Amino acid sequence: MKRVLITAGASGIGFAMGEAFAAAGFRVSITDVDEAALDAAPGAWDCHIADAADEAQMAKVFSQLGGGLDVLCANAGIAGPTALIEDTGLEDWKNCVSVNLEGAFVALKHAAPIMKAAKSGSVILTSSTAGIYGYPNRAPYSAAKWGIIGLMKTFAMEAGPYGVRANAICPGAVEGPRMQGVLAREAVQKGMSAQEVYDGYAQGTSMRAWVTAQDIANMAVFLGSDAARMVSGQVIAVDGHTENPDPKV
Image (cartoon, rainbow, N blue to C red; front, top):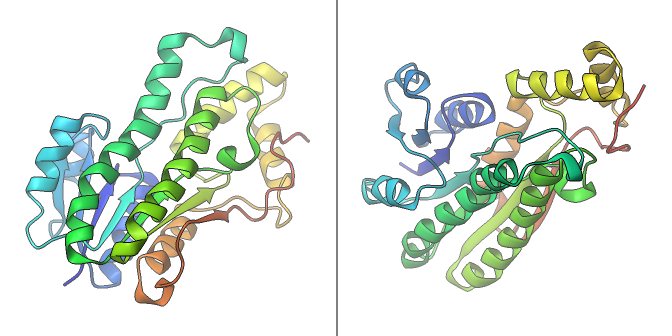
């Protein structure tokens, strides 16, 4: 049975990935900092309490992956502050970059030896359309997500000769609790209602719709499958085609 490890897998996109990979026949392992959410995960999953950006904690997780690792989903991330650059505190910047970018680096660092030794594997990093276009009022998040793309492309070049692939998924606006907080903060900054900001996100895509966590999970399963054996080093947006990175109504 193939194995997948998903960071921040107890809720949101990560949980949807876990369900999708389980349905595809994978043995699922997840990490998260939310112990209650881990306790609520399916009993067949291997659950680990770990901060994705804490190398010691993640090293322990990788040491407990009996049977190797076929797919890594470096998915951990936080929204970070919503503010102009000059109004963003350095500690808020560091925290956002640490979770989003350093967490991905730590996961790749420890997955690389396992996958290279097996001469196979697929790494899927969760970036964002904010890592393609930039995003006003979200500088730490955008910078980290751009960094993930550079990290992914470098890893793809280093690991490709060993038969290991790497790709980045760039979600657009994904329905869920995290975006509710973002919407509320943006509404205050723009002098709009949360509903107006919500509608603006949909209007900023050619498909006039929000993305679901399942949409992201479906792409992850494809990238982790043999059907994508020659897909590597790619930045794949699952966003309904974002036309306007600063949505307004």
